[in-house]
Amino acid sequence: MLCYVGALPAPAAALNQTNIGAQEMVMRGIMEKDKNKIFQGALLDPLTAAILTIDETKHMCDELFEAEKAYLKGYK
Image 1 (cartoon, rainbow, N blue to C red):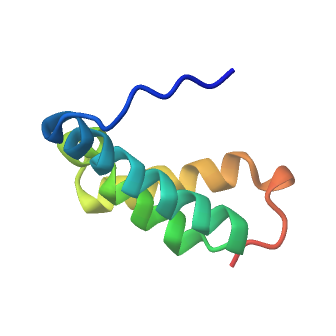
Image 2: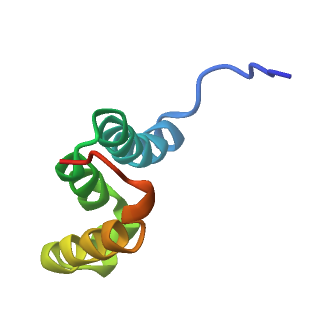
């Protein structure tokens, strides 16, 4: 069921867009099997950026890929 309520107020739309941009980058990475795009999406995530450095984010992504490598065949 879909319920259309109209355009979001500008502050709410801007807040959503910061998350949507990061999510879209990760999805592109998944669709293209590109680890770097997934890493870039993680860097764009507001919460990740607030907590981790760039190096820590890279390490986190590397650890996730290592832990799930049996399910992530073909990523470059």
